[in-house]
Length: 178
Image (cartoon, rainbow, N blue to C red; front, side, top):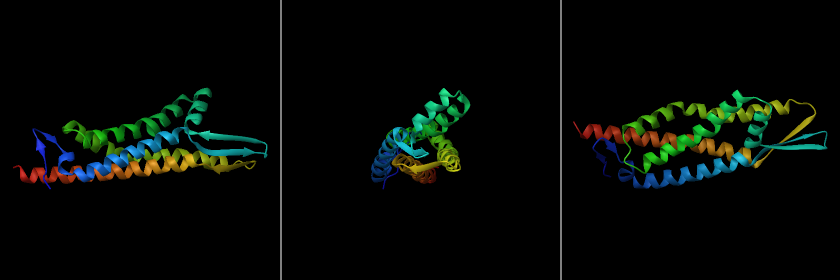
């Protein structure tokens, strides 16, 4: 295995071609799952056996805007949509370019703040729990919730793997270049 570093740039793609292929594939799959999950039903709420409402993340965000809950809307959009897409985009860029120190620092920052992506799971869990406490409603979990949770978990794994390869690569390069 050859470790490549050119003029202050790291080249994970050249050093770890198999890992690059695996991370790229997993990242594209994760992005697709994530995008589909945004519009897919998360759960169906049934009240009094007559009224039924199926909720997706996008429809929930639309409802927040209609109700004037701009702050909650922005928090969910930033941490549940923008942040995951940004994180996966940075990972793709890192594995497919001669990434410089700025991208390395960005990946480390995103990895450190990756715990915030759990806000996604927390938000969905709060929605489900709050609805389940309503004594007159039944909640049926839909496939969109599973797609969403799978994309969150895959995103965390991809971030961890990428961060470990980056640390290993930088450690090797610094030990071979005095």
